[in-house]
Length: 74
Image (cartoon, rainbow, N blue to C red; front, side):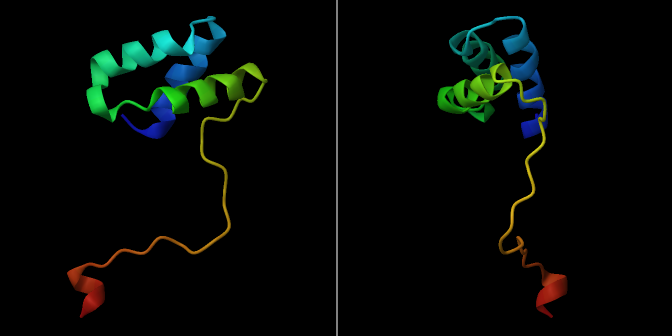
């Protein structure tokens, strides 16, 4: 499950007044170590309670991510 899907799950459950601890327990039960940390879930739940709607990452300035593959090394 990607970040946006986790955030959508958090957004919906926060709108249903589900506590961050319960959201975390549910995600850990299903996804194990792939689930976001409790701190991350609590931060996103707070973000949505404050009225934010976006689940995608905001654009950030900085160096772009690069990747080394055999094709671009040669």
